[in-house]
Image (cartoon, one colour):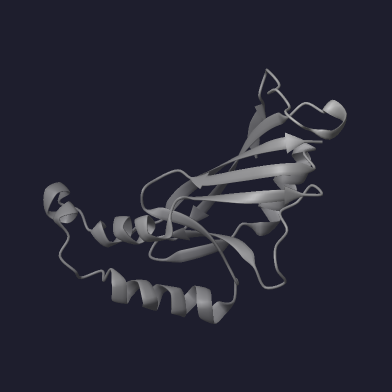
Length: 161
């Protein structure tokens, strides 16, 4: 994990006790297999948020790249190894015709479409120093590209300590 705290505190408006609002960023880096590979980021994300010292606020996480996405779901084998990929295959099939592939002579038009449908980022509340998640809810990285990749997830946490 790398990152740093912003150099100038942001003005606090209506914050009890006049605590300055702070903004801290860090990056998670994970290797993927591509081809609908899904990784659970929950533990690393929660640890990174806790390390910021921000107790109340908001975290925004974004995966860098146009063939990957972030979402919140249950990290359960049937869902992450079959169901999500099967559903996305019906919506954006690998063997479909994509002008992107014709333009760039590559094979990942479906990867861009899938990533666009799920989305590259999440806005998450920070309550008592962590993201409040349900019992069966995890934050996951979905890599749709057609080859293994190293993915960076940039996280910015803003709030008060």
